[in-house]
Amino acid sequence: MRLFEMLLKKIFTYPVFVFRSLILNKELIRQLTWREVITRYKGSYLGILWSFITPMLMLVVYTFVYSEIFNSRWPNQSDNTMQFALIIFTGLTTFNIFAEVVSRAPTLIINNTNYVKRVVFPLEILPVTILGSALVQGAISLLILLVGNLLTQGTLYWSNLLIPIVLIPLILLALGLGWLLAALGVYFRDIGQIIGVIVQALMLLTPIFYSSEAIPEYLQFIYWGNPISSIVENMRQIAVFGHAPNWEMLFSNFAVGLFIFFAGHFVFRRLKGGFADVL
Image (cartoon, rainbow, N blue to C red; front, side, top):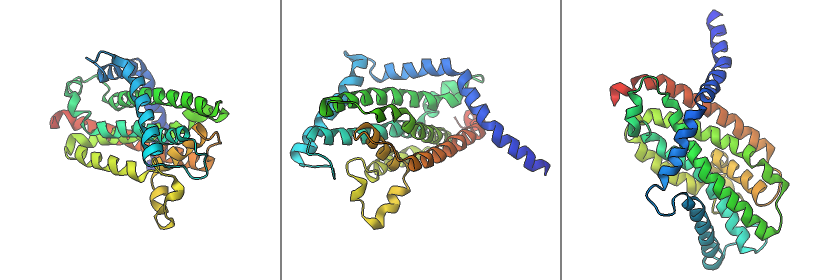
């Protein structure tokens, strides 16, 4: 009975511990995140302007390729080629936030061994800074998306205000997996190669370039088993179509994301004591 009470107390106090740790290190997180953003374009003439130029160029490419070459149209939507490009752009922007964190996480600690040797440095903030950098790029892409939507539809939707809420499960999921993979990557160096393949496969299995309605009935389990799918679907609904999100999917994604978030942080803290010995 005593053990059960201690376990229950740990479960309820651990979330407080995690968020308190992040809040206490918020200034360090801000500085390292900004450094990540600047380093991405360090040495280039246009610098951070590439954060705006790259997604704009990609939007133009999507519009041309899918409308003019593939002559693609989204089911039950207008023949507006710009809107089709925005639909694709929304899904890819959402997925890229997740992919950026997960792809870089396995080598994150290995590439920052100087921090491992600093006893007082909070290593758990490293995946947070990668997420912060990905969110900055994602925010710029979403801003371009909203401008494109305004030009296409002539208006912005009230549902656009829900974009941060729909992104919360994605943030929790990406950060939880970031902590988990960052810790495992120290002990299993091959995991970086494996994750690279998985991320590429996951991008194709997520309905980004096609509608979820195009997935055959007998393969629907792939859609429902992939939490990124429903997040991408909800982002399209609120950002491009102006509809309310599927609240059931949103709450389900939030529950899964919250579990992965705390589980990833717990594993990271349990394993980080051995980082110095391995490295």
